[in-house]
Amino acid sequence: MTDSSEVRRPEIVIDGQVFYRVEGDLLLDADELDVYIEAQKALRAQREAARQLARTGVGTIGSGISPLGQPSSGLLGIMQDGRIVRWEPGTVLKYCVLRKTFPEREWYESVVENMRRATDDWSATCGVQFEHVETADDSDALRPPEVVFPVRHLDSGGQFIAAAFFPNDPENRRRVFIDPSYQTTSFDRVGVLRHELGHAIGFRHEHIRSGAPAVCPDESTEGTVDLTQYDPQSVMHYFCGGLGSRELAISEIDRVGAQKVYGPPLTGFNLLAA
Amino acid sequence: MLDRHPGLRDSVASLPEFIAWNDSFPLVEVDAESFRVARGDQLMDRDQMMVEWIRLFRPQLFEEGAENDR
Image (cartoon, rainbow over all chains, first blue to last red; front, side, top):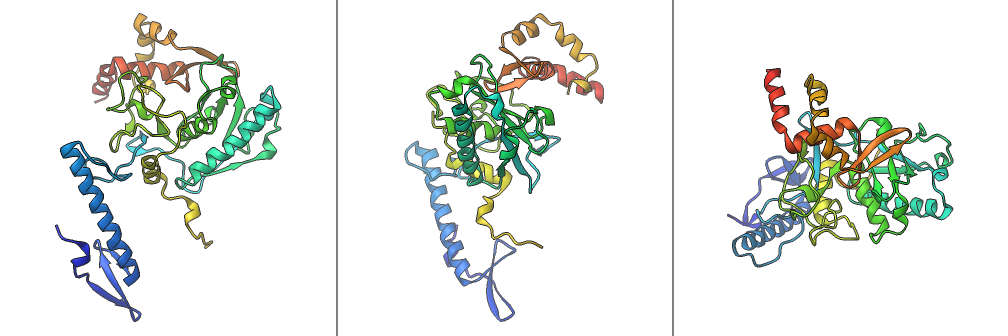
């Protein structure tokens, strides 16, 4: 193996400016090349640490790198007809919180606020967009046509804290339910919604993967795409077998996995109209 | 999925093992429709429960159907 910084890069002059070719078809200017070389050094260091960990069981590895030394992406996606299920690029996931379904005004208000925070967290993680259509909150319809999904109160008798849907579910099944137990749960309530929204953008439970404790709830993994290793800190992992967390935070490995499906957050781009 | 395997829905629906497993999940009513609460936080209709049961306990039923398709 050689150090990227020691490799003489092919130079190409375009309109009087010098570019360096890397990875076959990427042209970088001198500053970009310096950044690229530093990133490659960091990646190699992480891979070496991962190999060390795999060999000796001792050491730490940076986020996003598996013990196999490959870039890792936690999260378990859904496969349909041989392709990963995701929302179409450009889709704005419009939602409302159906005020009239909630028996208490405070419950409605807390769900509105927690949905805002949970959707912001996902939008800061990967290229998904949500929009709260507040005007639909007062709708009498249970499926306002102007939203992709409604969030509504449903008393399931404590059978779940909240429940959601997958992108490939039929349109009339796209809804997020909030049970009264949500109001008193010991889980982070924004975290509960982060988890449910993870389903809504196409991620299955993390604790069903190989490597999860046997005591975690089982479900079929048929039709899922298991790209890399299991992430016990995933937002999609239940609190079971001593793993998972009550915060249900989006882990660094979740971030890598989500970006593999949806790309980086759209806020990171300077979006230009045609 | 079940539609691709004629007769499978009816044959599984009458299996005591499936019936007992299906009935072990809590039932909720949403807008006059019944769903089982499965996988902890997902509402599944009877067909979805059937597919899940086959995948977990009798995957060969789908494989046999696939062989018949060929």
